[in-house]
Amino acid sequence: MRTLLRNRSAKVGMVIVSLAILTAIFAPLIAPYDPLKANLREMLQTPSLRHLLGTDELGRDILSRIIYGSRISLTLGVVSVGIGLMGGLPLGAVGAYYGGLADLIIMRFIDILLAFPAILLAIVVVSILGPGLYNAMIAVGISQLPFYARLIRSVVLSIKETEFVEAARALGAADSWILFRHIVPNAIGPIIVQATLNVASAILSAAALGFLGLGAQPPTPEWGTMLSKGRVYLRVAPHVTTFPGLAILLTVLGFNLLGDGLRDALDPRMVRMRR
Amino acid sequence: MGRYILYRLFLTLFVLVGITILVFAMIRLVPGDPAELLADQWATKEQIEFLRRTWGLDKPLLIQYLVFVGNLLHGNLGESIASNMPVAYEIAMRFPNTLKLAVAGMVIAVVIGGIAGIVSATKPYSLFDNVAMVLALIGVSTPAFWLGLMMILLFSVKLNWLPCTGADTLKHLVLPGLTLGLLAAGIIARQTRSSMLETLQQDYITTARAKGLREAAVIYRHALKNALIPVVTVVGLQFGRLLGGTVLVETVFSWPGMGRLMVDSIFTRDYPVIQGAVLVFATAFSLINLGVDLLYGFIDPRIKYE
Image 1 (cartoon, rainbow over the protein chains, first blue to last red):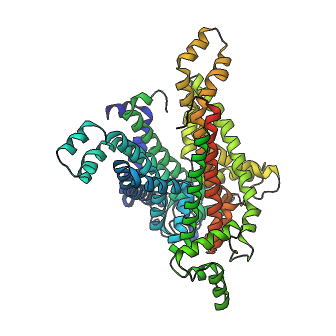
Image 2 (tube, each protein chain N blue to C red):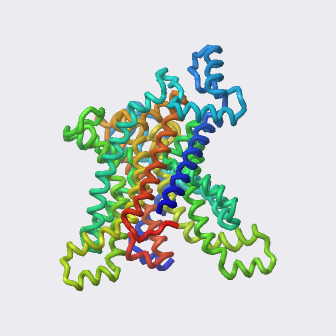
Image 3 (cartoon, chains in turn orange, yellow):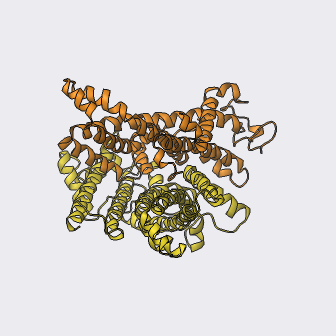
């Protein structure tokens, strides 16, 4: 933690992520207006003291929608990462621990999933499940699954031959106990780094699905969906597209900075190389 | 080396078979009768039955799969529900546009990212390095579709320099290409920098400097070649990301490519086209990965394939 706090970019990342989380938690207290309430008399207004970030095509306050949108985007990011981890962790761990045929089958399955660029895999899943907020979470989660499976496999492979695992085996512990009580907890460092970086890419992917009309549906104040609706008014009211995009950029940047900082803290050899 | 190439080819073939299984399974995972999903919503019962027979949908799954692969090998991807044209034709019309866009993006990314990474590594912690790496991180964190819209706002709406839709001339390629390229440039710059920094600390670089070589010769003749290997991996991976990114960029710039075709098809539930586009995207990505893997051996003869 001390190394992390010494890292300047990690500090900036932590501040941004904390602000995003606090905004999401206290959205009803911070937001000046109801994010869903239309007011056609005030549509497409430019930023003013009354509406700090202006209003959208239905006269809704953009700042309030961005504030509430942080709830959706953060949930999308975290839940998708959770789904990816839930799927990838057992696959990678079991493959590496048992090796042989199990490993061969699992890893070839992962190879096939990796043949799809992540956003494409998410689109494939949405085209099966149908568009929507929850399906977008599942889709993004599945698109991240292969990366966790690979990461966990490589970590488990390096840990499973160590002496404490040998000792547990000698004491007669069951495989599942050794795997999930002894090996996986030791792999937690790299997993946290990867998960933090993946929250960033999950938020980007989910916003992309929203932008394409395949994720959260209107009137949900999801940032990608807001951007998609606003692009029609790009010439007359560019602020409708500009601010939700900035919100995505800042949040993703925060998670990327934090993830990079965590990686440097856990692997100090890389500090000089990677930034 | 020969054995490794054979092994890698076999693995790619396996992945390609896997892709066909996934694409085949896609339509069967969607709730409803596959024959009805593959047919026009106004199709008659006879037309649906005809489709069922053509694609063997009344047969066991394994036979259905073999029929599917057989049709694929004959270039038959079915017919688009929306246009009634063969899917292979629809894709053949758009794939070159997507490829053009992805290649333009990649060239921009490699040039900008490569130069920024090399200069950053040769002057670590300088002002240039700091600014370049902050910009690179912003590039990695920016949504492609938003960057595209901001480009349109600046270069098309405000300055009126470049067109924002269409694909007729080279001018039309600038904004979508730049959008794609700038995003990938960030990752390439970061990778090039870290790889160069690592290489510049090697003993043979000290030797080269001790021999009195000019710094430019040390960097370009000795360090760069060796620093390239991890960069090639990242460039290969980025090409896949760029292919995925084309889906978004094509939507923003109304670029008549495969990504936009696929997204439009999802809304019209044109499953044959979705299947075809997914198949082509995934196959292209796998072949690029294969190419990158094989390229290693040529860049770095030290690599011995086991």
